[in-house]
Length: 309
Image (cartoon, rainbow, N blue to C red; front, side, top):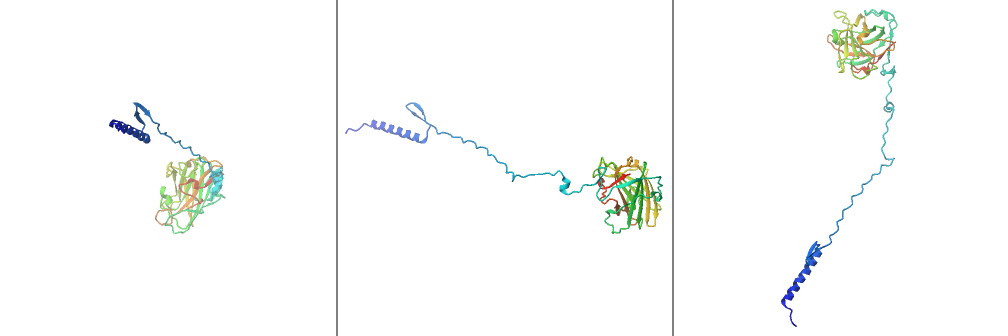
């Protein structure tokens, strides 16, 4: 048998290599091959983009599980607060009935003698609202006020029982001896609040010491900053007389010194107080009695009420 020439086998080998390469290219995903001078495009695998997830809707809680908030329209009832009684639609503190002040029937001589006071009712000071830390617990002070008024003055009479009288102070420090104090809120309807202001006054009435110190009055006035400051220049008259078991005191307070115009039915925030000093020759406010159990110095809402009749 005649053998094929060498060139034949060479061409056959080249063709076999080309076929093998083509099969390898198709199997490996090659995109393009050149064959017979033309470019052939092979199919590409499809690219799939996932669809965005659909928003999840949250169902509301069933009515039996949903929280509820109910606000009561009657707060006082809910928290158990007893409504504060009122006089002329203004509050009167619990524990202190409004003090009614009758009209004076004639002139009152301010000399410490209580002859002109007739049947004016007594207002006892039954509440100890202050005690110094050094107080030994001795209760040797009792006091009662009486009040009258006319178109010019508020009149004050006080009967004090005190086994020992000490008063060595005068002026703005006279409250550190045996003395009386009155506090007034003169614009209660327009300025009823828990801090001092210029419509608030404090008067200290001193009987003196019945020897070298004469009876006198000192006036303080509230400030916009909530303090009590000196307010000098008043026309308050004070008289006192020593008794076997204490002293009596009278005062005549011009309404103008309280920036007030009196009329029947006028309501004034007020509290009536007495100071006792049993410290001997040392100045110091040892205890205070008041007609108002809730009396607090810087809080006019605790001062009680007087009403002119």
